[in-house]
Image (cartoon, rainbow over all chains, first blue to last red; front, side, top):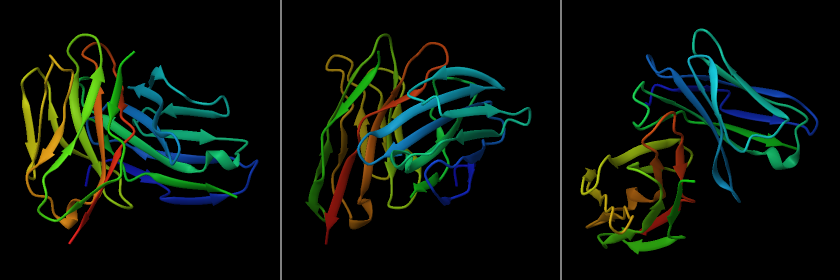
Length: 113
Length: 113
């Protein structure tokens, strides 16, 4: 158990819909990272938050947004969903020493029909 | 920018065979290097890490040495087991600021009895 909790584990929805994925980081970790894992593109970095502030953006679509709340949990919002958004979405958290390893949740599998 | 290149899979081995999965990287400065493993249906778990040149990371019989002169971090195991079947990701994290983990594309290992 990594200590990172993601919900829901599985989600099936239709094109055009909007979903929210939730992540609770390990106790004491201030950084949260979101990654997308799809069959054809591997693990892609989406966005990073540190103590409530956005720190870095990767290949995140404009239809996607995220935030980190004062209690440090984070939400990834995906809107106007397309078939190609079907993927496994991972959240990771890290310790205050920013060169250390990241700890990953079990992921949220999104299927868009 | 930072990048990781790892050998394509799948790698298919018989039980007790020797394993090598190649990984090379491009980065400025002195990144930290990691191997993560993803078992079927699960999230990513840290397998081992090395934070400076010539460090050897090891865990569960796996090992990898941080070679700055060849910019490599190859994963090895002397005798694989069926239970080692998984996808292995090489990753790096830069040494300054708020750095994300940059992953390779992953290598699937299949071990048969």
